[in-house]
Amino acid sequence: MVRTGSASAAAGPTLAVVAREAGVSVPTASKVVNGREDVAPETRRRVTEALDRLGYVRRPRFDPTKPPRLVDLVVRSLASSWSGAVLHGVEEAAHDAGLDVVVSAALSRTRAGRPQRGWLDKLTARGSAGVLFDLAELTESQYLWLEQHRIPFVMIDPVLEPPPGVVSVGAANWQGGVTATEHLLALGHERIAVIAGARRRMCSTARVAGYRSALASAGLGHRPEYVRHAGFDESVARHRMRELLDLPEPPTAVFVCSDRMALGVYEAVAERGLRVPDDISVVGFDDLPESRWTTPALTTVRQPLAEMAATALRLLVRMMDGEHPEGTRTELSTRLVERASTAPPGR
Image (cartoon, rainbow, N blue to C red; front, side, top):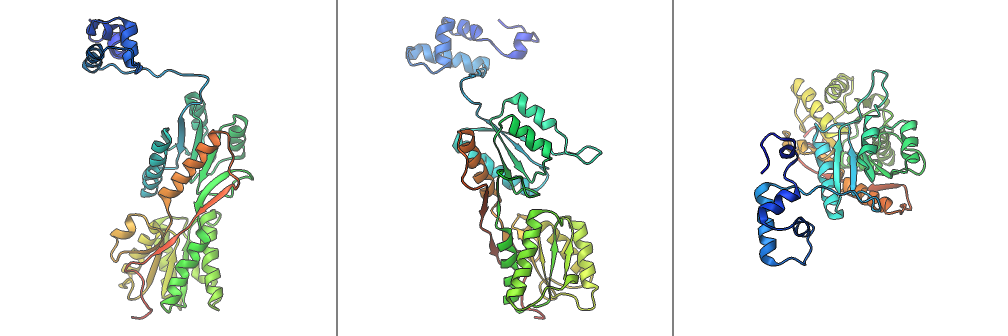
């Protein structure tokens, strides 16, 4: 009998305790725990009932001849619907692959502004077989560390252009910028502004390039005063929209490079006593749940976040098995989701 409060109780019952409870030998109890077939049905029943009754938890056994089936997902933050979509995609793909996933919101920074390396040490201690980085901005030394330790990894929507040979998965951001702008052009808008994210971020640069390309194809040159950057921050986007509305010739439509920033744009428009889309049309980017909850519901460019994450996990599994993808960059297509925030100008 195990004494309450003892070290043995804290660790759970041993197999010897289970065997004694079931009236069998330890080797017989071990056969049941390990799924062996050479056990009589009645004996198996007694052992199984004892396992359940005593709350026995099978201890993991590390086999050095087999690679661990554990991967890490390193994210900037868990406090967003973006992260929720990424987690959903990784979870489903990992389940299909028979993998376990450890999630770390570990890309915090030191006072000097450099990413902390605590997750690197934890990665080593866990013996993870690979890593997925979501919206990560790694240092040269961190890339080198991963290479030296031969840990395969895949970047999901990297912030900056990764070094040559690094595998990444993202969305067709340039085409998304084209699609958003062409939609507004088709409605008859010519004074179209863009509120972009961070200037140096890959996805933001590509979306603005797509916006400019669509304008050029329509015979319209982009107006520098119509291009604003808000760093993917909702409050900054609100301020940038105020600036656009203060122009001598304000835009009649705005392409906002994230749904979160579009919420700030809505607020700035409402502050001026204007309405979306009657006075100004708005197109977002991402198709997060928030885009459906706004009033009016936001027309946006959908990037397949869950599919991006699942694709990254499947690529990582191939790399863990010794393969290397032919191409280092995989882009999934985007598409326009039309809702109620866009209309012809001056309707």
